[in-house]
Length: 183
Image (tube, rainbow, N blue to C red; front, side, top):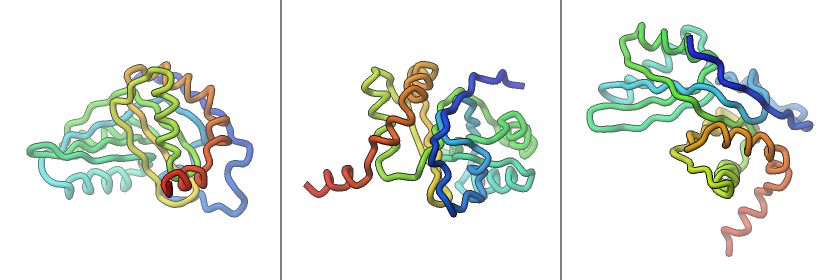
């Protein structure tokens, strides 16, 4: 059993919007908006992306909700990165299916699905001198996304993003960002 890292979040008062479909199949509806610290499961798969699909189907069949995922290939295999509601249960299911896995601490942000928002979160970390080792995002349907960050200092990143989460959402304007692209 992995130790539980500190988890915190801040509520966004207007979340979710009226009439929004939050039953999106990935378990986002169970996650409050805000900044979270937790565990990421890395599944090492020898073979093809079809094996990654097998892992995801196995987790789904066992009722394990995947909040975010990303795949990357390397010579001879695939690394599948997963953020789940219960990393211990997910790891056991993956190992029972014959795959190797490991865990590591990460930060994830549940936020509105807005163009450029992950970049704005990354800029905030950079402005504080925090290096981003990798990042990815997942969403199933509008309006919610999960952005995952592995940083050079996850604890500091967690505090920086927690302290600035609501201000960042209020000041981030998709229209402004799109207008800057047109120049």
